Amino acid sequence: MALGWTKDELAEQLNSVLPAPTITRTEVTRWENGKRVPSTDQSLGALSQVLGIPLTQLRAASRLSKVNRRNFLSLTALAAVHGTVVSDLYASVASGDPVPLMNVQTSHGIDLVLASFVEPSARRKLTAWAKDGDIPVLRVNAAGILAKLPSQDSGQVVATVLQQDAEARDRYLTAVVARLFKVDWSVAERLAADPTKLPAPRQAARILAAETLNPRDSGARWCAASLLRDLSPMVGA
Image (cartoon, rainbow, N blue to C red; front, side, top):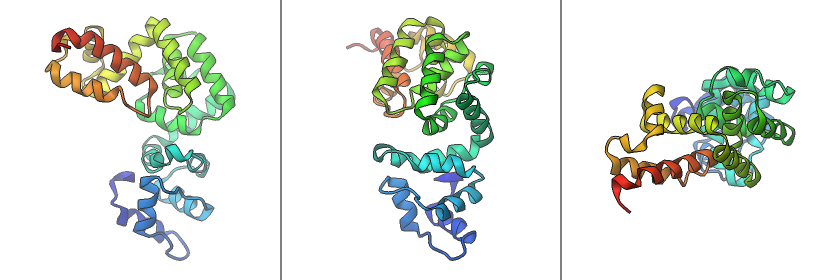
């Protein structure tokens, strides 16, 4: 739930900024389970005020397809945490400026929020950067955002980048290991290079197997499958 609030607490916070209380716990539950997303400027405006997220970002998130509506509240929570960074990064993507994506590798959470706002023109820019960006950080960042899109075409681009671009692949593998096993970057880098060094190999295999089904990150699915393959001699068939 956004900012750690319960459904009742989020409803109460929203109603506190509305002219009349209209948001119920049931309505918040519908947002959470994907049955509906806020569709009025009044509801979105209240969320914007309570969570400190620009209204334009919430409008973009509210246009999620039915398949992805379940992600609305988790995306708004991530946006509340990463809002300024996401706004700046997405502005640069929309304008065709790759420089901000060259500075540092973005996190899984930031990529998820950015991907929820990506329109066709931005997707084309990200595809070009993922394939032909000047430096590995740009290529892996662009691929990471594309990997969070539901588009099969974007998933194929990400798979191609990971297969053909060793530097981007190493960075993506490291990010996946760091996130799944909660280790710092230098440790994750060593483990990504040699998954047989993962502690508790059978438990690690179960974690990786679960990640191969991650519906929100095609790049993580690819990396988990690759790591699981390399780890398989330690755990048997």
